View 1 (cartoon, rainbow, N blue to C red):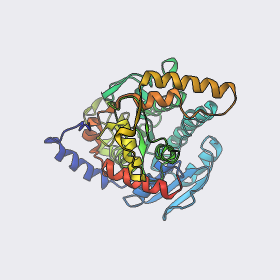
View 2: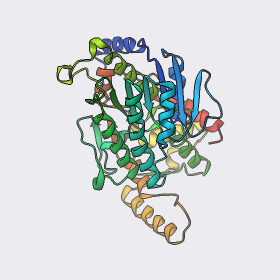
View 3: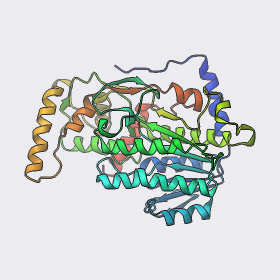
View 4: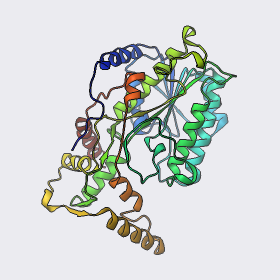
Length: 384
């Protein structure tokens, strides 16, 4: 059963007005990190059609299909000298930092990019006069990868260190903590930061969620299901995530105006964006396997309900554990099923985005099923 998490009410008109106001805020010069990735590409595409004077991208390499009007810079964001040289050259007003390695990258790479790289960017941004720094965090930062989350909001504590089984998520939480701690520092009082926490990003250019789903379809595994499919899960189309980043950047720029640069203690805590984190979803959680089967159907799958083998969660964990041990012992690489995949596909995980609606004027621009149809078409077209 699909769930509507935030029913419309009288506040929706206020949220729409706030959204319209923020979309009119000139962003100035914008730098987006990770410009060759799916999310960053969507942010660049969306921002190029809106109000900014210059648009720059920082990544290890330029994408094969660059966006008209975007200035691409190839550099390693963990190379402090190269990063500072870029900032000294372009002096960005806004930095949207969404560059990140995959969650299955080596641990030292995840820490170097997500933690050290973010620190380098923050320092360079402050010293070059950047006003707004928007960090792409993750909705997983409050998840222990096992406990169900139902309507979770920003009051939930971060799960880090020994409590966090996923090292990738641990590094994202570390980086988010640092970014938010650098909001309005004494040495740079007009430097504002915020963090966006998207859940289950998918869409055109997606390099992880949809390619994995389509790979299972091509391998003929659509007649298997882990768990009972009663677990609601939040996925977010990447255009909507890009939209949230733009709204956050505009809110920070607006707060940087001289008339709005007041002390933190004087700010309205009900409207404040700087120093805050925001969950972003499509506001349309679906059972995990319902989403997956919709994607398979868009790709051409015709598996009938009676043909599906449903494996209970407990048995799936046992099978996954055995496969992991066997593949490790025989040095066969990654197993087709892992305990991590079982946990992810069987847990309930959906969030409240009331705060993002109220303070950013956020609303999804692309409906979930339409975004999924477009994303699958794109993924199949790219050979995914």
